[in-house]
Length: 441
Image (cartoon, rainbow, N blue to C red; front, top):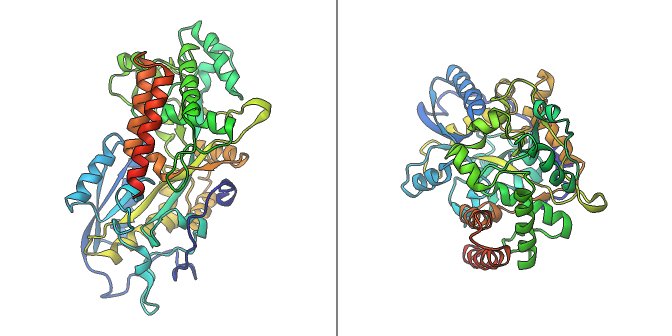
């Protein structure tokens, strides 16, 4: 399944890793080889991910009490800034769940995280991090400047998920094209409901959908893998026009309405979503569990990935949903690697974690889930939909925090009527070009 979803992926480099040999699915702790220690592990997510991860840590601490794992976790909002601050102050955790773009922002030269390829250089020592369950293309996402900074946990793409009860009550079916989505606004508006909404607390979500629409229409990539803009200023204007049509057609709420009704709450915490006034979301398959968990079981369903004129279906994007990295400042890299291996490859751990981080990239974890019957649910359904399309791999530069600020500023200025789409596009194009030129240096 992993290889299918990569059909439009760009292989960033070729890797030759000594760990990619015989499978070692569970680490054997040799006497005197690993130190007794306590290690901090940090991640972000919703309650479903927190609960599963805490259960996995409990299992590890039971099996290996000599290496205690101390959890640090929270929601996504502000998490990037927290980890950046920790890293700058040399206080980051030993093991971290990291976002794709952090390899650019926190490790521009490949020196921001521990080089994992160093772990297995000595063939006479045990393999603490087994990478034989990952294909070369999957591993390439964690490479920066030729150094293996991180290991991909799962591959994910954003999909459309709908409240089936609300759709049935309105007598509507899930849209398959952009035009059908736009037309739903009138039907839902008659009952003062919305067929979809875009979480303004999740940076860049609204712009993401507009980018998919334009990538599908033009065949261009918004941001290339080497950090250059692929859209023209006119392309950006048309993307902003499309976003405004979603508001004007009553498909999504205006930003003013979302702010008035939700305050600072994320959409999955909003009474508007939980109560069914908002009947659809755009979310990563690896994170949709936080929406699913606040509704009755089975209510949230994966919908079709929208297509354009003449059935054009490209433009939808995939990326490593998250990666695991080890701090370059840790005093216990081997011990940290052993725990990372447990998270990635251990069969019992895989069953506990389920799809709370998407479908595992490790073939060992994926096989364990399949055997247990846990390889199902919305993440799996969304992956199957993506496999049918000519997907685009997101550039890590598109995910940078400053880039999301630029997108959101443009979207907000158009939504509030502060700027027309011409002037907002001109400003956005200029700011993106200037910022990308600076970070590429």
